[in-house]
Length: 378
Image (spheres, rainbow, N blue to C red):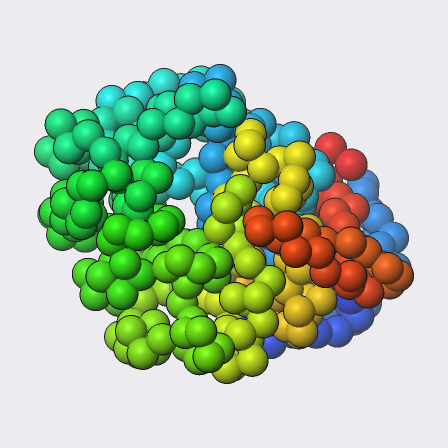
């Protein structure tokens, strides 16, 4: 068989197959063709030597804001792919049913990298967040648009993977759980999962978790006090353990104000790993403290998570959360996306959202991506 592209000699880590080996990865007709210790590359027009590098399934960032030009938070998904190795960006609530059509036509469809969406239950999504204006869209219940959200979700099943809602002091004010209840109506009607944002109370972490079902995602799951998932004594709250047992998924969603090293240390010390690691990248955190997805992943490496567990949290686990098993894997026949990473040793400074610095000895960097079976923008 003549392949379109072969990545040769890298360390292949694919948690979907419990694979960790030095191997060649071949692509043909936009899909993964074969992974083997040594492949015949005769006739292949593009053979790339990636010796000394990691080859993993195309990274999936479960929480991004990439409605560039349509909202003040939006960043460019293709530029993010180049720096961060993310071949699939999941936009979480930038657009609601009132402005999704523009997001689809002007951003998603022209993008060479994949963009999927959690549709906001609020009519215009997250429309008023900048450095000078911050108005929580869920503060105004008149903006909740469950009927419109159902209509748009049903008409765009190819792109919409779930329903987004934001609750907390800064996003819903005194609306309490009412925006979450509106999102639940949409989720029940469409059969889609919810991604729920939580910030400072009200409502409480426990109150939000109590509403979520198996397959729903709580993002900002390792946030600082108040509304942290741990007690003052460093134990995981019982409501968190109960929610995981019934199948609620816990996503990092680092962002500008939603990830603390202290919380992460406590959660990991209790054996509670995140299901997914995401950046919550947007215009207000791309210059720090997030920077990109690979920096977010590196923080968890330096906190003690194993490399395969970190890769799983941004590949197969994320694909499972959005019910897209063709993504996040290097199994033959899977979508032909891959990320090439370097794992560097040294001294690296990391910072969380409360200003704590962590001196780490490892750092992942993106060295290139494969999109639809082709080497893309090295």
